[in-house]
Length: 472
View: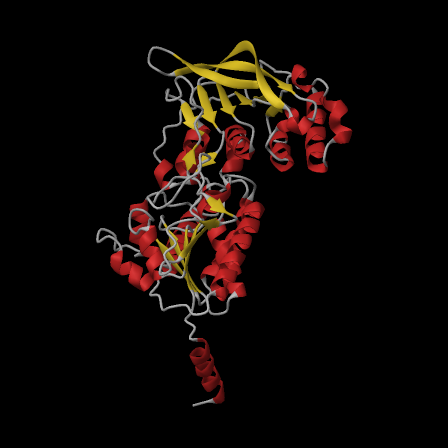
């Protein structure tokens, strides 16, 4: 027996230490960043990534706009994480359906939940379920090939549409609706979405926000892209910018640059050219909140009744939005609700806050703390709410993973846990179609090959059944 081997045996005997086993539920950005931190900081950790869909990457695959391929470059980093010898990927395994949190806690030393926020926030106003009132989240899933959204009916036959909300998702939706179709053909947007968008009659698109230009949630990159679109003019309302320019010197740098860009665009003073059939119009509106959706006798959208608002308060950042009592009607045949996402409680052991997040303290989740069950943690939007960009998610995932590492290192003697080998035995008999990383690589290759024939980076498979056939 070699000296090196004797040293390893001696160390194992002296510490009585077993390799820590960590289960991460959700293979999106938060899950991969957490796995990255764990494997970098604990040489002997074993990480299993469980994902509800057969395919990984979550919102990086299904939420990032097709014309933002550079944002998807993080997939290369995530692939390296998945190929780490101590990391295993198991797709097509759903928490709450195939396996319970209690079962996972029996077979791992730590369970980290990162399954994101996949439900839409609703406005709670009259006629919200009318035809042609669409959740922006579903529309994004539709053009990105998310299996659950592939059959969404999107009616683009009306000339006027409105988006309620002024965040980056709202601007993604606007850009996809107003971009020249030939620009989109070069992306990984789904073929069925291309066909529908090619026949779109939308000419005017309103972007409606309840507060003012100084409170918009979109970022300068997204606005700049929108302003540069071919054959698309941006028309601002003069009243919305009263007093805004005077505040610029006192603004923090990111807000200052964004406001300067809006003012510059506003001063360019685009007018509607009624005779130009190819021209489209992007029209942001401020200080308006939807009061109710207006419908015809067939419950099809005809417009939105808007409450007029004003801001009260001295400090800009603390100003509150209050209704003036006045109303306006905006006629439109299609409306997108883009006011945020919320997470869903998929397991009965999880306690949720009123904000649609798992109740936690800096990523630590309070559940039944029996000593023989693993501690539970949460990272990403499931714990923070849907805030920030991928960089924000990375910071949060690293922070929570650091806590997991510290807690595992403080456990003097980790008992032996079976990990996914044991979990697999308890998974409902209805699901023996578990996709490993090699299975995903087959799906990936198939999609890239299909895309080549169409001059696209990939043509996504939108059916879970087809994904499984290829992977298995």
